[in-house]
Image (cartoon, rainbow, N blue to C red):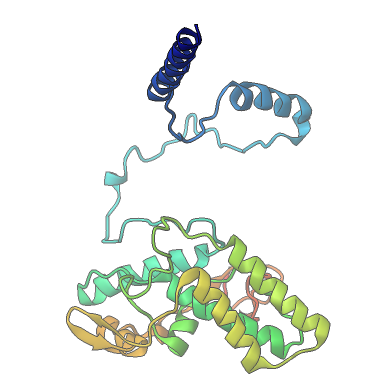
Length: 280
């Protein structure tokens, strides 16, 4: 009897272990990326729509072109060479992207060279110059993302320019520019300088550069292009060969006298450039 009970218990334990083993073979799982389901796509969306008053919902203005004699195709225009448009990502650097594109077309028009230049090299040194003025003005100079078209030749004269291959301003694996965190970190640092009266320009600029180096990478002092070694200024003078003083800035400003050079009084003109020719 004892042998029979012992054998029975052994069989039960063996059967239980076999079932567990079988369950282990069947019940397997894998990690998958979470997908938006009914809760997010339907419930949360409906709640947001209900809680957002009609007056707060964003609206856009669109012009009604009905009855207007307009071009039907871009082929109706005389075309000149230009690089394909590129995205500025989540940055306030349209001033640099548009002006850089213009100068790329100028290089082709004058020298028949097709080149893609680095917008972010210019942006990097623009922030350095903004930080320097912020310190000199004891915090009473704007430090934001915006600027003006004539900031590009201004920075090029000071620091030169590089092709996109030499400095993209993107980190490994990053597809689009994103300066949100970088700008916040630099502004917080400069505000702290203002609050503590720590106006050491050399130390401050070192920190500003280190912040940008983290988010954008460090711009090169030298690089190779088409097998030739250049500094950024050499590249401007010897390869691009643009005479930057040949270009002027024009606006039409009713609050300033016409036929004079005036200041464009907007926040983006943070260095108070007054070289704009004011014409009717």
